[in-house]
Image (cartoon, rainbow, N blue to C red; front, side, top):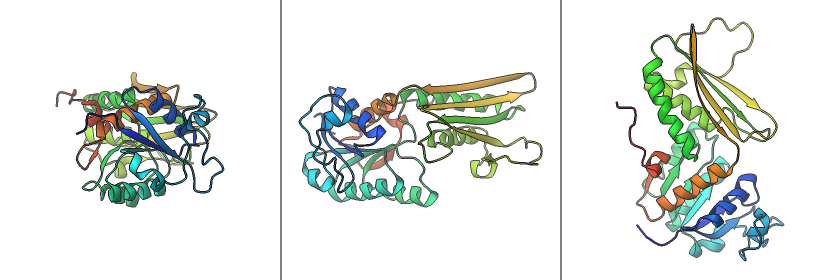
Length: 277
């Protein structure tokens, strides 16, 4: 591993998350903002990244291809779309770069393709880079192991802004996977993602999902464990995208210079098994 500050490139600099990521890298004393990309042919190519992100001039121009900055970067941060992310993984494999992936909405086939790069690219892949969310996942594991097979119904409720294109959110699905594993259930078999009309009474092993899309909600997730007489709720609320961006920058520092592999935020944060299992 290298002790030098990693040279970070942001993919999708013109997007909502891209702009916050630029600001987060710029604020981080242990990282260097080396480049950021916009769509090929975009009128924003050549724009100052600081002005694009609203943090003042930085003297670094947006580019419309990673090839233009291939010799200037060590690690990418990508919160874009599944197909673009997979294309960027191929770029990293070809050029020996690391990558931090916060992209959600990947299909099973796309996840398999992503995983095929685990022996070629050092990657951190997580549906949510927030430190708080990843701690919440550990708390959910404890709760599910304690309550899940004792007559408690499990429901996952998530809310995001009106512009989010995938549902349920990657974080909600990850929460569902954690609680399902803790009670020895298969989420593909027991996950219920829609209830409409005369759907009948709830099956005891269901893990239900409810989705809200409204306004400018950054991200809210609640997992409910409910039985007759009481209800326990584990909730995480994000009020700013900066919490995800700072986690991604932390992941970029961590993964830069590491050997190829598919890592998660557990690895980045050094979270031990606090469940006692």
